[in-house]
Image (cartoon, rainbow, N blue to C red):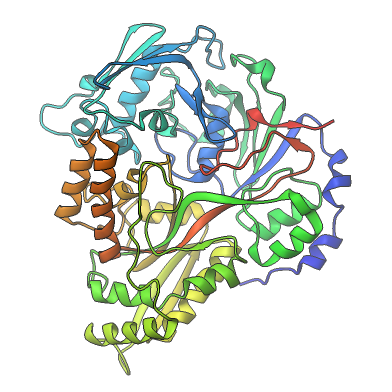
Amino acid sequence: MPGIRSLSFVLTIGLVLATAGAALAQGVLHRSHDGDPGSLDPLRTTSVAEAHLLRDLYEGLVIHTMKGEIAPGVAESWTTSEDGLVWRFMLRRDARWSNGEPVTASDFVFSLRRMVDPRSGAPYATLLDPILNAERIHKAAEGARVEDLGVSAPEPGLLEIRLERPTPHLLELLAHQAALPVHPATADRPGRLAARVADWVSNGPYVLKEFVPSSHIRLDRNPAFHSAAEVRIETVISYPIADAAVAARRFVAGELHLTTDIPTDQIAALRGRLGAQVRVSPALGTYFLLLNTAKAPFSDARLRRALSLAIDREFIAERVWAGTMLPAYGVIPPHIGNYGERAELDFKAASPLEREDEAKRLMAAAGYGAGVPLRIELRYNRNDNNRRTIAAIAEQWAAIGVETSLIETDSAAHFAHLREGGDFDVARYGWIGDYSDPQTFLFLFRSDNTAFNVGRYADPQFDALLGLAAGEADLARRAAILREADSLIVRDQPWIPVLHYSHKNLVSNRLAGFAPNPQGAIPSRFLSFRP
């Protein structure tokens, strides 16, 4: 694998950002994301990079502000029934598609039905389960029709959503890409994305103008957007840059105003050179290793625990990630809403030597040891931070008799392989919470969640607890139920938690409006250039 160029070389090949920014057009924001989107159809997207682009292209009933707070979007106001089961959203009259047509409540009915239609196979269909009949529909239950989804449009400007049960975090769900509207007449038009740019229709602050795979995506301000006058930046050009060192080099050279990752081996030098332009903040996310529990030997909980015990999370957090990540001993990250004490691994306080000794005993009990190594293929998506992390884990596993073969692919290929049911032993995975609630992490382990539970973990007790929590309106009782479910995942470790994420951005001092938030939402509509 090619080496990483030294920071001193990086800093000498270009101009520093403070002086080079003038070379960029004032009306153009240049930002990076970590790979080409697999799609820009909300129905098919799953990645963080896609979510960044969708925030610019579409607007839902509600949105996340730059501070991560819920605010009106297409809906200018809403009301809730006393029992919390009926929500009525009043749409703004000036909401328009980019072709000038009005955005109506019927467009949301169409889009939400499309998301749960079992023929669509939408990965995020389960996110809409609180809506009446949604779960029965996307699971293709007998007699369930997509028309029975609890959404209706009594008037063009009024959307009614009926729920299966009170859902305190409904607005957070509706801010997610799964609830974005699509233009009914063009939503299912066939053809590659690059070929459809000319007739693209969306309702957000920007509209798609160019998509050149492996090069860039250009978005122009949407003149039909209801608040177009408040969108300061005329054009956003996003570049798929999986290598954080390359993104940093381009930032320093003045070619980028904003990045979504930082090479951790360069962070100290970058801080020394760029100062406050280096932004690190907590994130609602966890960095995992997925184990394929549907195949031996990874179906053996003893072996999964041994692999987890052997990982020195503190070393990885401090030495590999330069203190920008936290060691993870549980699935759910700190700072999560609607929760209390998180479940964590019982060996958190043990010394590295104690952990290694127990790991070797468990490996021996599972049939591995001297002369009988455990051979593992470990897949991961290509970027510098992942490469260093995976190399460290492979070295730590070697100490307990594991021989690790590494398979590196780009992000699109890596996640497509997992999503489409490709075979694997262990795979790197990460999850950024879609909303601040433990359910956004725990739903990943439901046995019927075929879109995201790619390790095929199945525990009837866990599924029953999530079902019980879904029907509990009292937040304290619901948190206690979810904590019990959380403890089962920590016990079984179908996914090994390694780190809790932080958001790591390089933000030009020419940009105004940026604010860190746990969701990592950075809508371009709220950014502007300082004079």
